[in-house]
Image: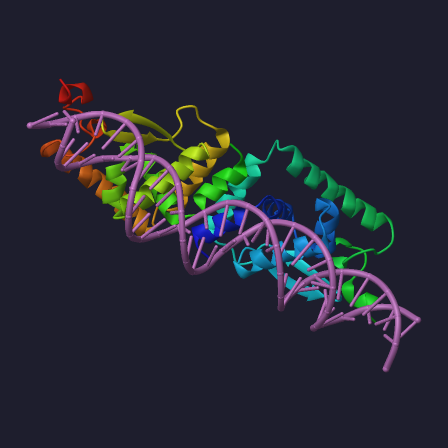
Length: 130
Length: 130
DNA sequence: CTTGTATATGCGTATGTAGGTATATTCTTT
DNA sequence: AAAGAATATACCTACATACGCATATACAAG
C-alpha cells in the first residue's frame, strides 16, 4: 500500500466518511447505508474500492459482510487516519455520522436483531443459524 | 479549500514531491524541472492544478514564476503537510529530492546566476534589470 | 523591434472515477 | 426447492485527470 493509494482513497467524501466510521470499529454494509443515507450500490462500490487498495478488510458473517480497517496496520495509513480524525473534529457531516453511529448501536441493542451481530454484543452470529 | 481538494492534490506523485519541496521554502519552475527531472509542461500543469485548488501561490519575478505554499495557512493543509513530511521521512524519492534541492542551492550560489534570484541571497532581482 | 528564455495554455488521447440501472451471487428462511 | 434479504458486479454515461505536442504569452537582452 503506497501513500498515493491512500490519498486516492481519501479523495472522495463517501470513502472518507466510511474510513472515519471504521476508526471506531467494524461495521456492515447496511450500517453504512443507514448512517450515510446512501444507496447500497454506492456504498458497496466504495467499499470494494477501499478493499482493492488495501484500506479495509472484509469478512462474511452469515448474509452480512463486515468491514474493518486492516488488522495489520501500516504507519502511513495510521498517520493519515489520525490526521483525518483531527481534521474533521468539528466537521458537521462527520460529527453527524458519529452521532448516527452511536444511535444506531443503541437502537439495535434495545430492539430486535435487525442487522449483523457484530454490533450486538448480546446475540452471537452462530446462534442465529442453528 | 476543503479536505477533499487537499487529498485530490495529494494523490499524484509529482504534486506530492512539489509540495514536499515547497515545505522548505519557495522555488521557481525551473528548479522543479531540474530536481524532479520532469518536462516543463508537466511541472507547469501540476503547479497550475495546485494553484487552482489553493495549495500554492505564485508570483512573477522577472521572467520567472516563484511558487510557495500559501502564506495564509489552513489547519487542514498544515496538518496534512506535516503528516506527509513524516510519512516520506525515509522514502528514497523524497530524500533524493531534498538532497538535490540542497545541492542546487549550493551550486547556484557558488556559480553564476542561472536561475531565479529567490535562491540567491547575494543577487537581488532588481539588480538584474537596471 | 527582434531574438531568446521562462512559463502557460489549447488540443488530442488514453485512462480513471462516480454514479445509476439492472442483474448476479450468496446466504437464510420456510 | 423456492422465496427473500444482503451484497456484489456488469454495463453505461458523464466527467476528471495525466501526459505529450504544439503554440501562445510574458519578459529580458540586444
